[in-house]
Figure 1 (cartoon, helix red, strand yellow):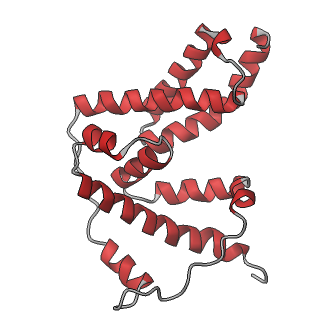
Figure 2 (cartoon, rainbow, N blue to C red):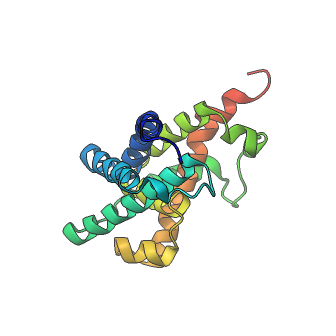
Amino acid sequence: MTSPTDLHRQLEIMQPLLLRFALLQLRNKTAAEDAVQETLLAILEKPDSFAGQSSFRTYVTGILKYKIIDHLRAQKRETPLTVNDGDSETELIDHLFTADGHTISPPATWGEPESVLQQKDFFRILQLCLENLPEKTAQVFMMREWLELDAEDICKELGVSASNLWVILYRARLRLRECLDIHWFVHRQPGK
């Protein structure tokens, strides 16, 4: 791979990004810092484990994902989890859809997905939108979409039914869509 000095430098540069990702998922600064430190320690203990089959950043993020999953499993054993999002999704649905189920206005054009995803500002806005979701809703969404856990595994980890899981994911997607439409895509349309 690279020299130990280069490895330390690369990890030092990546540490703030890793911490932001872990904090977004765990919503606890101490737990996020622990997950990042465990990730960095795992890499430093076995620096030759990186085979170069992906980018180094992807490799490090993959390890962090598993550390976060381990933390979530440990947390499940330690404290009971309740999902309580309130009733505000009714207002959101009424705002986005007519009584016959059609959208009030079509979603804004989001542009070319690959180019949009490459922009740092998009991820900053997405992070803010995720932070504004109820904690458990954001956690379920991140477990499914970012950590790529199966629905069955999420249900088992969080002690929720499959139907409850899909309702939570539906609510998360609605709220993220609205937030991104307002704070990102509307401002990126030509002439705005």
